[in-house]
Amino acid sequence: MAAFKLGKMVMRSLFKKPATLMYPVIPREWQERTRGHIENEINDCIFCGICQRKCPTNALIVDKGARSWTIHRMQCIQCSCCVEVCPKKCLTNENTYTTPSTEKVVDTYIADPPAPKPEVKAEPKAEAAPAPKAEPKEETKAEPQAEAKEEPKAEPAAATEEKAE
Image (cartoon, rainbow, N blue to C red; front, side, top):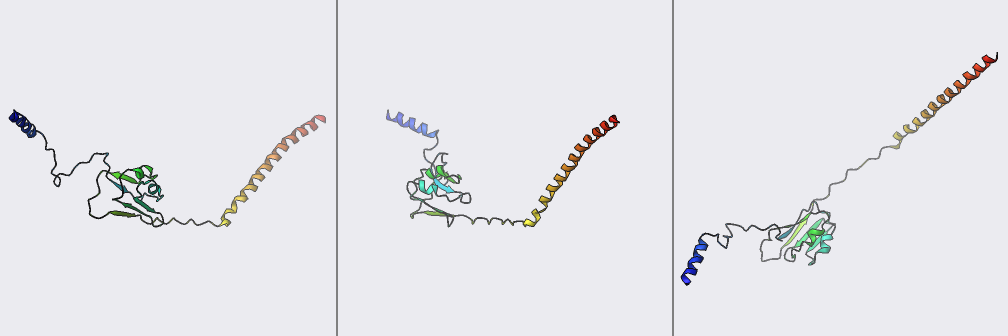
């Protein structure tokens, strides 16, 4: 009986894939929801520090003045709290793990310095003076209209004088 059980297992193993991978030759394919390591798009980051306050292990350090973002990889537990609260969505949880090491890994990201804002030169106020000159022209237009209204009144008065003669 044992020979049949062994024969059944051998036949099954011949037609299936092996249970293990040849690791260095064939790397493992991680599933989409695997928690691996935190990455930061540093140029999109506004250094608000919300991720630092939400981290339960205090693995993150955000320095707004130096525009740097530091993570202690061996202290991080990949809980994704920082990824969820990031207002600019510059943090992502990659599905590959940190490279093994015998030392504690600390990654520091430093952003490019912000681009200088262009200076807006104020225009001299002397150029704004022509605008008030346009207002008196409107008043002069109103005066001929008033004269035009008076003229029709004069004509009927003249017509009544002719009738009286």
